[in-house]
Length: 297
Image 1 (cartoon, rainbow, N blue to C red):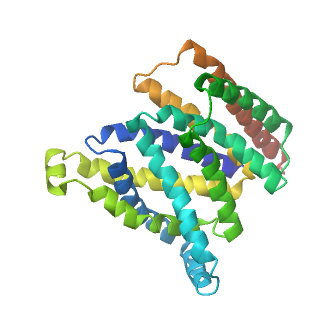
Image 2 (image 1 turned 45 degrees about the vertical axis):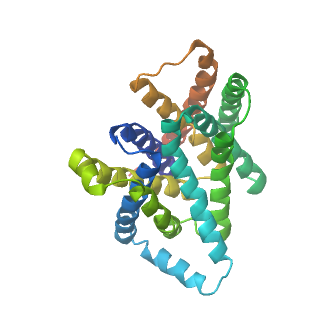
């Protein structure tokens, strides 16, 4: 479980880094950044899958496509659910919808916790119950401030739980399944990356993009890899609660970019940070318990 927690936190750090990184990719817009991200993430992810011995998983899923007609529905649906989230993450900050999406990420761990308890009958530890209660206070206050749920918030809060439940039900919750999810986004990614843009002029006028865009693909691939591996190693409820690390880091990125937390927002962020602290304390406690339980020579 410790490895799963480390992978989840690593993914959150990388996603937050990518949130800031997109500000360096001017003059690309959200759709173009998404397109380039996917076009470069798939080759990097393919290298990871080959290097980590995950190609057998790709082959097994490909073989199942010959026998299971339901997989022809599940895989495109799974890819669409993931693709929408990856696009929304890059599109929202550039179109004045960042607040709505951030609320969705605040709601997401609670919705995943609820799915874990109701669908998979997972039980929460005392630390996790306290973290969930604290997070609920922060989310409730944020909803009170904004006045309700937007469509962007609901896409995040409901889309990701559906994605992970579908992957487990279809038995594609592995590196091979993620590879197929990303592969199926390529037709749309090509359209987004090349729409309304002169590629020769783009790189001639902005030579730094020749380095920044490939690096975006590397960051994206490692972040997604860590995120999906964490989802496979952790109970869905704990995995959902660890999702609060990401919006906290996104707030830190926003502060680095010059934004400020208003006085009325502290009641949102303090309970959220407390929830993250409780989860961190539980992880440290389990790590120490594991260390003391090791046999001595």
